[in-house]
Length: 54
Image 1 (cartoon, rainbow, N blue to C red):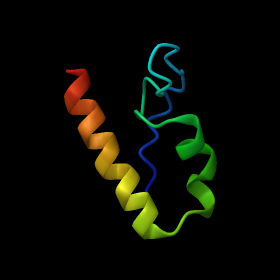
Image 2 (image 1 turned 90 degrees about the vertical axis):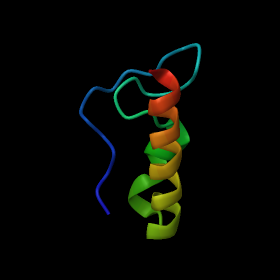
Image 3 (image 1 turned 180 degrees about the vertical axis):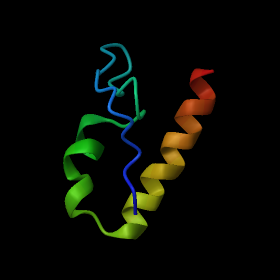
């Protein structure tokens, strides 16, 4: 499963989310060792976070 990373890696201090991919640091750090169901759950949260940020 592809990563949501868009190569804009800056953590927003107020939210704790990456400004590029909308993941938290723990989600970014653990991505490589996660099973696909967990990655899918993160993708779903990323989508919701993107919508909320608009």
